[in-house]
Every structure is written in C-alpha cells, then in structure tokens.
Length: 430
Image 1 (cartoon, helix red, strand yellow):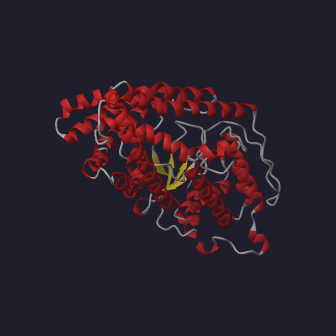
Image 2 (cartoon, rainbow, N blue to C red):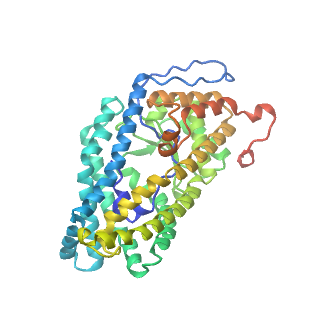
Image 3 (tube, rainbow, N blue to C red):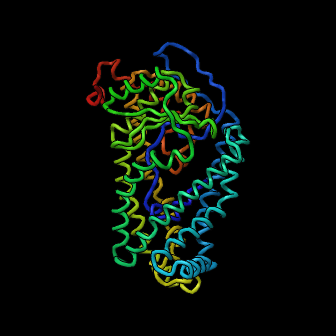
C-alpha cells in the first residue's frame, strides 16, 4: 500500500526512508545462471531480460502516476473544501480540541486509504501477479491492507495532535520543534517496529537451519554484534523477493532472514549478505540516517512554514480555514511536503547509496569472499527482474542502493587483503 502515513500522521511529516536490506527490491522468479568458476574469477554483469526491461519501464510509469496521485488527492481535498467539511464533522463528534484532531485523523487516514485502494490493488497485487512475482492471495493482501490502515489510524490518533499543538502554541517555531522532535520519534519507531508492527504482517520464528544460524551468529560476533537473535520470517506466503536485515537497537536488535533468501542463495552468499547487513548496524548507518532525516525534515517544514501562509491568505475561502494550526490544513501540509520531498529526494537517496556501498565494503572485508558477493548480486538481479544499469535519473530519484552493475563491479575489484593493503574496517573485527 502507498504510505498514507506520510500524509496522515505526525510521523508522516518526520519519517523518511532509512537504509534497509541489501535485497529490498521487487521480486521475480527468474532462474539463476551463475557459472561456478574459481573463487578469484570475476562475476559478469548479466544483461537484463526483455521481461525485466518491461517491468522496469512500467515501474517508472507507475512511479510517476503514484507521485502525481499523491499530490492530486490532498490538493483535491483542499480545492473542494472537503477537508474543512471533515473538520466540521470532527468538531461535532469530538467537541474538545484533542478529540477533534483524533477524529479528523481517523477520517483523513480512512479516506486516503479508500482513494488509494485502486492504485494500491493494481501496483501491489495485480501487477506483481502479472509478472509472476507474488505468492500472495487476495485475502492476505486485503487483510494486510486493513492491518496497515489500523496501524496508521492508531498512529494518527496518538501523534497528529503533537504538530498541531506546536502550531497553536509556538506558531513561529513549530517547524523547528517538529524537526527536532522527529529524531526521538524515529528512534522509538526503530525500537517498537521489530517487536510490535512487523509481526502483525508475517510470522517471525527461530531459524530452522541451526547450522546456518550458528554460522551467522559466529559472523556477528566477529563483527562485534553481541547478544543477537536470528529470526526466519515467513515471507514466501507473500512474495518471491529475497531480503535480509538487521533491525532495532539496544535490547530489540535482531538479525532477520526471509525464508525466500534462504531458499535461493547458497551459504557463502547468505553470509556475505548478512555481513552487509551487519555493516549497517556496526557502522550506525540507521542512527546517522535518522540524524540526516531530522535535518532534512526540519528544512522541509521550514519551507512549508514560509509558503503555507501566503496560500492560505489567497485561498482561505476555498480551503475553509484561515490558519495553518487548523487541522483542516493537513492536506495543504501534505501536498507541500510531497513536493518538497520530491525536490530533495536526491539528497537522502545519495546518502543511502553511500551507506549501502560502505556496507558492501564491510561485508566483503568481513567475509573476503568476492565470488559469493558477486553471485549473490547476480541472483538478486535475476530473481527480482532487475535492471543492472538503469540510468542517472532513476538512480538519483528512485534508487536507495547503488546499481546492481556497480555493486558487481565493486565486488570484482575490491580485494585489499590479497594485495597486503589495510582494511578500512578491519579494526572493527574481532
């Protein structure tokens, strides 16, 4: 489902994408054609299949449609005065200010969900099945969609009052306080997400392959990650994608492998992938990215603060409100936020690609198995109908990871240990 949380919640104004699994790409069931040469032989970057290129091109069209739709919906709610009507209804039901905001959040999230549903159904269910990329039943998809709606409603009720209270109490500095507040909020989400949100959608259990689990824990100890738990998640019920990640921090940190990646990658490839994910954790990429996200969010909210007043003054009769602190302004904030996020997207995307590249370096230095790393990326391309060299515009606006072609090239070339050179992250290994 397209994330209506971005529009509907206080977190919507704060949370931007953070580094995640190396294998978080669209899934696909292509056969794997890796030639088993010597460990030192370079891995060739495969040419994308015709099917992969159709998936790539149609995905670009869908991305543009989704981007436009994400702007049309809030603008439509403003231009028709429907947001003000929802606020009036919320006032009749809630009466007191906090409950008015809570009721409006419920109405807004629910309406956004309904308006997004046809596009979500096509992009997440119809299209994935059309390319034979999904195992998900309609009942499972619909159930997960309603669970997501429930999470967003709860989040909206609990959090949306915060930015609007700041708008009322500190109208000149609300943007700064919201930006600062985004950082602890994202930290809290990192803590509770693995424990309470992710298990709503899939079953997390212990690793079935205890030998593989022992190898992963041994690798984690070498990487300096203590007291970790390894989970196997039943994602094959939904997708044919492959993914693995390290999530949480403090007492919630966990190593997670989708059952699909265990089925499709061999042991050495899996250990490189886990080395990559451990690199994110050891190098504190998520924490650094949260800090960067807080700065970018603050900048975006400041721009909204400067622009929104003039728009309200000009269109107050049509909008049905005359202050940004009126909860009916949420679609205006959402529309401006979506435009600003699009404009600034190359910044967090570029930072994310840098972190992913360094995680690749960490995984290579930890495992020193270039061949396994390269063949893992080849399988990723073939399994996910990937385009290994999509072009600069795609990379700037859509790619949170380096292109697969660049990643394979790097795995072929980077081997300082064989040349007697020091490792960049060797001091972090035990």
